[in-house]
Length: 265
Ligand code: ATR
Image 1 (cartoon, helix red, strand yellow):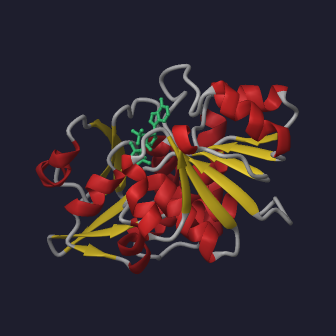
Image 2 (cartoon, protein in one colour):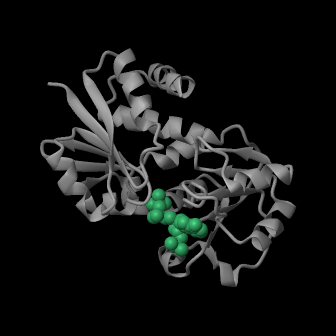
């Protein structure tokens, strides 16, 4: 029977995941189809998953922490960071994984010799990225709009700031994990803080893809090296596809098939 997969998010219409996965299903002759589902109430994720009779799903903003709660079983890394972007159903149980973290790490392999990172935002994506980057030897600090969401980061031993408590040290890389700029033109942090950051930063990365966010536009104007979220999207997608299809395909083959989605749109 043909398997059905979906991405849940709010917003979700911009998502390239359906095209990526459908390209790979077709190229690898795997009998499945991938769609998108606009979910505003994240607490209904589990119910919707079963109602749609899905074999697996991806989860994007703002439901990655809710997806963590929706699972029956979690892999070690997802458990550590409390954030899930990939769910697979096996024997009626939901298994949760986080492929954002490894996907992101792969996407920054091109940048060598940079150590100090500031992450903007304190949601599920931020947690996954901050932990994997620290595990891989980077020094990571977090800056978020509100103080409340910083509590788990403090518990994990990260140095954190809200806009009110921010004090500048030198960061080599600034990563925006907030949804500022996704469907509006807002900046992830106030302009006066960004200006300070751009003074020292070498590289600015936004996990948003498919458009130039105000953050990346300003970074470019400030002559920083910039990178959007396309490579992270591709690499997290390859990992998710491996979970969906139980590791029966070669990752290079998946890569080549998924890459076509970036030419098609
Ligand atoms: P995800 O799980 O995908 O990371 P999320 O849990 O919704 O998404 O987290 C979004 C993060 O982006 C939050 O830290 C949020 O800040 P608050 O804690 O203050 O809500 C931040 N964020 C979202 N929109 C923002 C904006 N326009 N400006 C600044 N920060 C924003």
